[in-house]
Length: 147
Image (cartoon, rainbow, N blue to C red; front, side, top):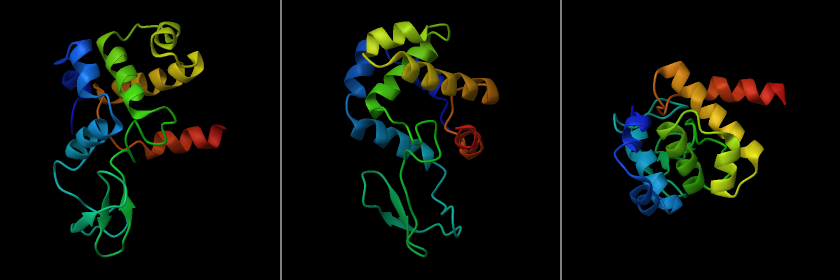
């Protein structure tokens, strides 16, 4: 499991923006880290896969279940562009105390959007000791039932 807080700290902001400027670059890192220990289908447990329809997704060769690199991560169901989500993650990991207002100004996004995503990141750090890519189904289910 990648510790994104440590991973992000190896970049300065300029290098980070250049490296993660496209959704493709972000998905590549997510896929590499998500399945670094090997692929296992969430539905049937099969370990063989082929390339999925979307970039960096994997499709089980037995049950045909397709899983994106983004699913079951902090970025699952993220409504903002992935490079923006990565940048918010970078800024929050660099400075846990950054305000959602400052994020909103810098990212040109709504303040509430920045606040929600920052909250998700900080909950993940609090729960796991770092900003990792853990299973977040329980956290997402909790959000879905409260809406």
